[in-house]
Length: 313
Image: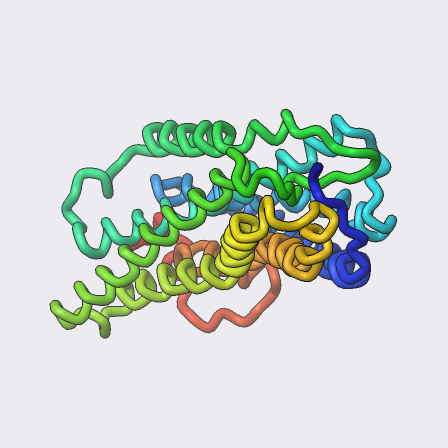
């Protein structure tokens, strides 16, 4: 049987974290969607990626109040099993979607800087939208199994520690959807830096902006997603070591602290959705100018880029 934990630490730590992520995430991503839909025109292929990243983050934020209520109630789900699975699916799908669109943005910047004459850089908006739909299909494929989960009583978790099994499709998808994009993002970042150093282009303003953007993507990705994946791997390793050697009750007791840390790091992954507006802010000069105007901030740079088609590296 899966282990059920009292979660005393989670009850006190997670509600304020989740509420903060929800409030700031809705404000930041709502502002981003408003700018993208009504002010940032004409769109380019890279704009499609940013829009879908903002949409994934916004949809994920919609599930956070339910998770906060779950922990405020002492890890007791009050909304029924169907809504539990819907909530878990929204979190899993949009977390994966956010990861894949961050990866796509990194690849887009890599192509524009390292291979500026490649035909993919002139990809049309309709083709970019088809690519975005393919990404959404992949994320759904990786996370739809959440609907097959069975929950005991009022327990609503997609990552349940089972001493008899240390790996299932959901955990495998969670791990692969991090390490593959991590490799791609690091590859793009390292090659962009190397390319700029070889050609001594780092002083170019547009190139610096591209480098800044991909650096922000890499840093956010590692900070938000690496801890939970490390904890997941530690749990898998520990399960392999103790499975079959100890009574299940003893295993669950031994896993208490490790699992508490894992659930906290899972909630830290939602910080990505709160911080992604930083990526939008650096995505184009026009977006930055419109955002500053919306917030009534003094323009530090010329808004010339706003009046023309938005420029992207």
